[in-house]
Image (tube, rainbow, N blue to C red; front, side, top):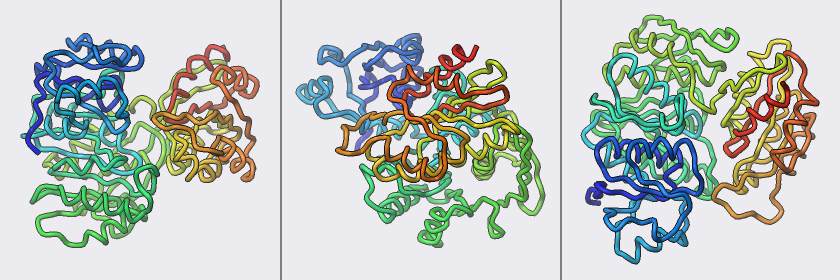
Length: 460
């Protein structure tokens, strides 16, 4: 495929976290960026401040006469009026991944993949390399500190990118260093089996440039199977990371310290200790993967470890929203059973004698159909759970698939579970449950994230 003309791109759903990052970088590079989104947002305003022309709502007339192409994600339906207009005009329609691949050309690319942990690990690298003066470009699937901070057009030679496996689009990238954190079955609308998942990740590994490096988990079963399937490949260095005795970069110990962890790793035969300023073993593992990947690009391990200690998190990844009446409210993006369990274990560690109360919103009908029972089992790690209706995102309802799948499973595992059908019900429910010292976790990939301030206001 020839390089797309990104001189005047029009983005459909420009406010999305993946789309907005690419749009931001192109705007900073001088492109005439335009786009549309279904709603106004802080992200839209951030793009407008960079000179992008953004329309709220989708209509054929939004498509500028001078547009060079239209950029879409897999979530955009064929009936979208701007997409219909683009095809009628014969404009090139570019997938988001092709646009990202194009803007990474000429850089030393580090791509972060895996079923869970991509955003955290990508942001750890972006923040740490920036702190070391490398000024990397990056595109992250979450805001680091404020709307629009999910991307940067740096002056350095490194480009750090989150590589999305959900629709196989990560197979379009050609990284010098790739991280695979874990390999599990998810995105059931696009993958029918673990075999398909493994084939997709193998195709991603095949895209690593000759002489490049794969950093892969030595602990997670799916990642270990992938490593075995890959075998020895000419021109590819494989670095395994984790607590397993055979890991190339081995985690010697992880010591919880409230909302932080002290990590000791064995790198080239020498122990190296550093702090991870977010709680939980899985975040410690993400940091060690970032350490190994940065080292593969030539960054001294001691310097990178020190910089990683300055990472304080990304929005929606165990983000403290505030405290009221001695009750902390924390927001989590976790929506897959493995992520739910990992975040609850991390918060349990930080809660001390306090209880953990969860407001959970299942994400996607297809995911709930396949994993609803596992979601409920994971939620049973909390002291009490409020479960909302399914957030549909891009999907149409499936007959018989409701939050009851999650609720029934949670109750069968002994969880104190309450159902809620609207966001408006939740603050009052939580106010009736929470006691001083408790932690409240709003959890899910949908609009449950908006509840934090409402819960805090009701508690106060």
